[in-house]
Image (tube, rainbow, N blue to C red):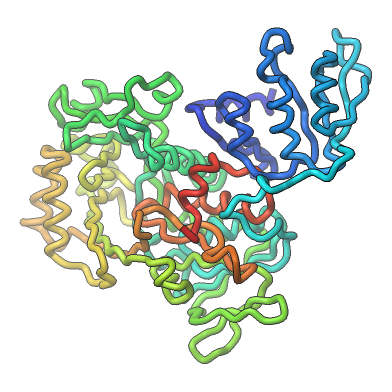
Length: 518
């Protein structure tokens, strides 16, 4: 029953595609493909230790047991991979033999008398040309020493994913504390992206939200560090946003906002809006600290890496004076805008994007919800408003952020405060009216936070080797843009899966879209 409850807690939102479910503090991973079996078998690239064939009986579902399906299964096997099945049907045994499996009958589980067991051991040499995608490293790695450059969300997530797999991880950062850059804002939103055609970004965002939710549930304190509050998305362009039709599994994620939630947000009934049930706010710095607190991770601050040198099978991370800050068999670049120093900017162009948050304390910090003029949940669309975030000084609201391309200034400006307020007037007119006095009559009470994000040309993260043909042991997980909370944990797990030859946490097409060498 305890194991069934763990499974049940994650059994939601299973739209067609690949899903990653996590058990035993991340030590057991279930990669679940929801699709036709032949399509699912095309979406992964790994070698299996064991295969269990299950499903409806061959006469009921013959396509699942035909020789073409079993050939696809064989592509995942190496010589010696074990195989088992509950069915002993002769056509299945013949098809398995044709695909290189040697099988025999064995005692079954009641009420079946027999089962099938064997191994993959063909009399020919198997071809593995389809087993190595272009975004994968040269060969699966064995855990050793790893240096992660950067300790924001991207770097902390990579460090935790690799440490769980047995690596000794040293995290280097130029700052005096983790999450000193764009991951240091008071609170950020975790919500899926939606689109009428359920675009690649939408599918990636759902996988990322699921991955981050698991880490938040495992590592953070609800109500203090994060909250699964749900998020209302005001579709300010008046479009529906959601695909049509949208199956029940999709409604687990997002649905058309009902009249009650619109009224709570001070929006007219009929306003185009979506309600994201599996969404909420998180304090990114708390998540970074929790990820870095995992075993086998050592953090080293005030260590600005200016160069990387590969020598005698080792990578050396060097400071501005050429002094070695760390040496390791694997280096992961996850340094936000500073990644440009270590990557070939012509081959991997990155853009700095400045963002300013406006925030302030509620007059009655003990109130919850904070103000009758503010919604009881976060709202996004044209910027975002998080109405109630607990801080050491009391309950705060957070508004923003601005989006200034090619700007690396960290100085706050009054112009950006006004831009955040102007965005709120479009997003939530009633809330803007309630907060406007703070901006105009008591401007000293409106505080700011400024961070610089890092984005790629197509606004998707960069994951994997920057150049698969060269530089073994050098990989990246960077360019999270404005979606660090959505993408950092997913990208870390994708990178770890690539490095170790594991099943990928997303479909192959989605993984290809994130490859660093694209």
